[in-house]
Image (cartoon, rainbow, N blue to C red; front, side):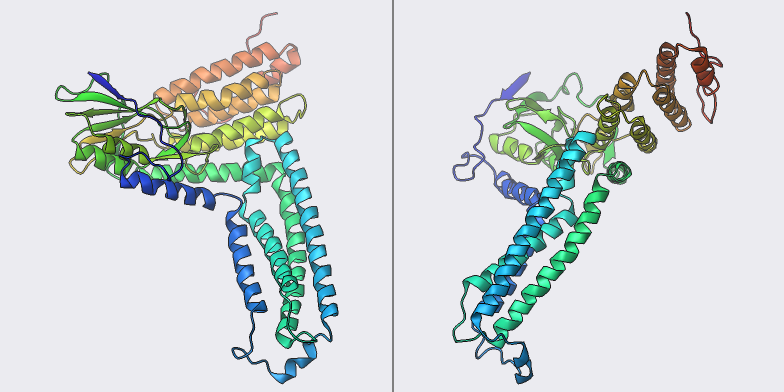
Length: 469
């Protein structure tokens, strides 16, 4: 028995929510908004601008009766208001010019990065914390000086308090000049190949380490089939369809397991974390004795985390894919940079070696060791095909690329077991076949043949490259 829940789509606004939406579903939306704000480019600039605003508010509010200024500070006072306003006007004009120049350079850097590497990296470069820090200090300084200009001071000449605030504005501008030098240094490093590749490798390594650490819990296990062909005899199968289109970055498996235990069933996810799903798609299957109610379905969907783009921190596959795309882009005729492609292959080799150290779990059990949630995971075979096949295809005429891929497969064979070893053997045979097709000169064949069995490996490779005229 297969029943489906086909509900009308809920509007994204909370002003008119669906009547039966559970409290958890209602709370999930503001949590998603908060997380999206923390990951956006506006996060640090907004906090820094707020801090500068509070300092500026302190500078312009009347201080008589609250703060008494010592007489020895009278030498810092300006003689007249025009001098102060001229100084502040000059400072804010310079700051605006500095902001325009700085972020014109950012656009140039991002354009170069998008053309040389991958357009997926552009948003990541924009949202880096040091870029946000510089932008926040720029905007905060402008806001502080604007507040000094907009709020006039009573009296014929500026007081000590307002004069000190003006000197503070000068110090802020000098600080921004120092940040400008720092910004130029970081921006120049951002588009360096080694820096970009190393950053992707580090982020993907952390994602793999996090996944491996999470699976040390006894509640995670691995099943041969994540969605059984049929439900248990005492259960019926129901489906829950998605309400929106987008990337599902992750799911709260622990909460889903609790929900499944509450109605004594099993929840089967019909997607892998990071997949792009459509609205009204059969997102989950539920095996349960009785059909869960509408509120329960809403709560299940509330534990799925949607996001924009490809998050490497949550899903290591995205990091591997971006390194592959960088290698393919480097092999394009417009860039023609096989050195960058070989650098990406080296980093991919290390990440795939880390992936061979463990098999990702695809099920969660409850405290009684009963399976409650299952989800599909990408196999090592799929990863190899995903990251190596495009590089082999676009670099098939470059002998160095083929040899680099062969060296990678040979290195991975030292860590592979059983089916993974057979997969690497088959892939090595394919690479050697591609090298044979590309080697039209005897010198090329001799060069390749001398390197077929070089280095440490556990593969069965020929001693000489087979080639037929």
